[in-house]
Length: 202
Image (cartoon, rainbow, N blue to C red):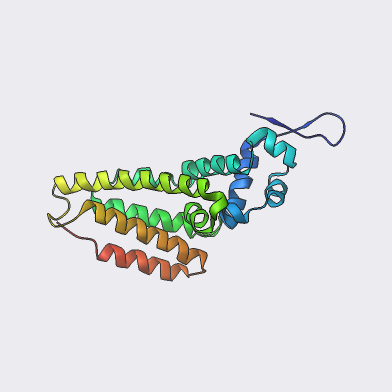
């Protein structure tokens, strides 16, 4: 798909919205929703503000599209993690996936969802609620997976699937915040190792 950018003179210049959206994602990921200015976004996307509005809608609509892209491309490890044969395998895949995605060297540090939730003020409450709802959906899928593991005897009888899911997502969010604050890879790896060492066995 191509979108027409606002012309300076002559014919409109076309741009690839997928490329522009990927550029917007990086800006939001680096600065959060409120921290990303329209000027920064349009400069990174290589388009004008009228073109942004014409192709993507307003800043909020652009962020939601960027968040969709983030979930498709950067959080694809979540679905693969839920398919692991054991509950511990699920946990390990999630933790290592979070480490690779949120603490890598090529993309901005931290999790877009965590960064945007923390940085959102009253005027961006709808964005915050959207991010929270998406996170709740993912956590519900994790709870369901751990309930199955519990029923299959893969988790001890004393284990609480909901508490385990909450614990694991809290650790993952903590990894993101640590990464954003400049924690070393060694420190983050040690958090993953400690979490897995404490995992309940049947």
